[in-house]
Length: 423
Image (cartoon, rainbow, N blue to C red; front, side, top):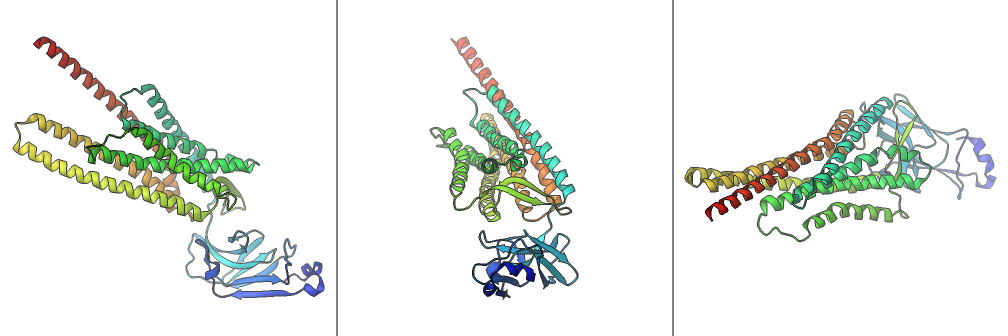
């Protein structure tokens, strides 16, 4: 203990208390792994030591057996206002058997086993991949929106409108993401909070429109009869854009209780540098909302996929029976064949969508909380392809829609010609 630090305290109050907690369960928060006893340093009354020029030196004997190449021991103190473990004002010195903590204030201290932060080199490479990928994805999703606007007509299929809405949410997500680092450099706090909230909203919108795609396919292929709903597209739009809005608005409404959006620091492993981005600052909130929401959508889509696959198998068997026993009724067999083909294509479409977006965001959540470079690189590369594949998907849907309209016009013209000849 630095004795000279006590000179500013009245002599009658120069009493220091040391409390040792061998049981750490009361201090275990989120995913922290406490590897030593917790030591609390207290002064008599409301006195506190802080900003010490000569730090307090504590030596912990801590030799955990579960240290790997991605982990290391680090001194932390407990911020009793926010009730989180922090490292401000503490330096860590490691040797074979001991961990030495030098801290410039008094509070509860402990040694935590944490994952190593990302290195500066990988951060720069991943940043370049992310910006280039998000730029390409935003470009192709913008093309999708432009193409939809100029090719839109009153007979436009609902499926195409839903595809474009998903593309729009992805465009918003990629665009806002490219502003996340810039927003953290702005002095006005509300700018970063707004960018973080908007990015969270667009992310939840992507998940919701994935679920809307599955719901629409269910109504289209499985619940074929009595599927007319008034203002169908409007209701889907309210769900796709409204549910994420309610979640984000509720979170913003709790701002006075706790701030969930703002500047999040990402520490570099090989330097003292930190990079700030605008995102969710609370890990518990991140997992409890985003991961649960994503899991519900992914399970729902998987259930629809299984139902569609089961329906396709049944239709295949019916079609096979028709071909075997009703070879003369070609018209009926052709109609069954068309429906079977459409069901297969739609099922494959949903499978591709679920795999593309579900796998990508599944990797994002899988890599949260610790540094896994293969997952990070895979996520960045796959994320850059989302906008392009959705653009191709919409192009094929529009082409199929126009082909159907041409066939309907030819059929109508042929019918009118046949009617005129018979008259």
